[in-house]
Image 1 (cartoon, rainbow, N blue to C red):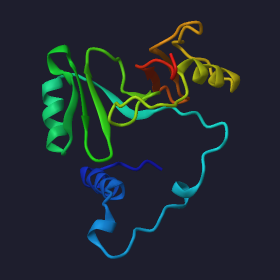
Image 2 (cartoon, one colour):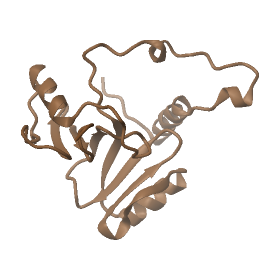
Image 3 (cartoon, rainbow, N blue to C red):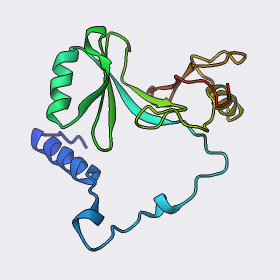
Length: 176
């Protein structure tokens, strides 16, 4: 059976996603604390990798038009240089990179060693350790960090659906 998706259906789905994704600081708006989510209370598994800050890197055709669009959604530029064709935008919960002519596809990006404000963490998993752990789990990077290197480095994986995942460390290993 073939089902067609109408503009109304897409609008309804987008609205539902936006509503589901909205968060508020309920404690500041109510006498009642927000119920905690069961997953938030659980501890990560012992073999969980600390991949750092997460963002979506968008391969855009017109950085000025994309900037205007995402600013209209409430995101603001926190880093980058539009003249160099890259910007990083954030709102309360999301980080989006706009890259014109730098990526072929939209890319999921993790930055080991950084928090969401691009502040260097005192402890984190170095990219070379992450790479070794991924390889031990049978994952092969399409772009690998030089294992004997130090300092900033990158690796890339492709997920089963063809989505690029960039793990891009901009800082030195703790203690280096």
